[in-house]
Image (cartoon, rainbow, N blue to C red):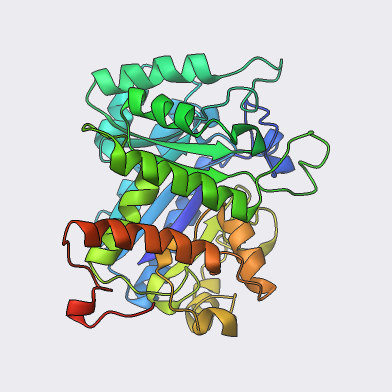
Length: 360
């Protein structure tokens, strides 16, 4: 499968204090001409690689900052490009959901499989507008509109050290909204150093997540739909023992940006090539992917779902330095907690001793 992070614009109407991408506060939008070039280029690459599916993850900046008219035009072009192709095309989107438009619901229902991913934190002090006002109230109202229209809403929350000690409040916050949610941690970068944000360490994030696991398994139904937990459960029950996203089995992943730029996954602005040049598909196909898998990743047998806790940029950085900070005792503790919970109910999984389990 080909996975494409499709950046519709670098612009964003929020000024999240933990945002590490300085380019997302301004910059270019993707033109309709570039959208056509990008889709043609991607189709050609998928054909050369013999991929049967392409997943476009619409992103930004804030992807809807280009306006619903531009989004509609891009989707129309996508349909025209792939109309005769046997390749399956799927679209997903991650948005801050602050830019409401009457066309949003029809577009999500028709072109995004009636599903949307929304960034929403428990702590409102970091996801703010340019004037410093929090965005949570507006986002919660728009989430309610989507749910009333039958749209499936998933939430992504970002944690900082300010959340430590509020585990029960975080759990209750997302349980009340009643949408599947995933938690990641904000990470430190040059762009956030001046923001005064205190970041969770890997160990602190691990402890926070495990506390959330404890609350979930001891809660009476309906429980909070905490994706971090259920991802591990599904992986254990389906024997998903794969490498990180750099492994060949995970397919190729890269970013398509405004202006013809092809860049590394979540490394905006570092051009690897141009989708305006159709011949460059051959180079990408031959190379497989420009980033080679570190030896430390090749030797890693942890479940892929446990390689989490931050964005792809930080995970890649960790792997490049061969520290594998997301494949350490932290992941083993999360794995062991879920294993023990499944074992207590006699639920078989890929690491059960009765099915030839053992250490991952």
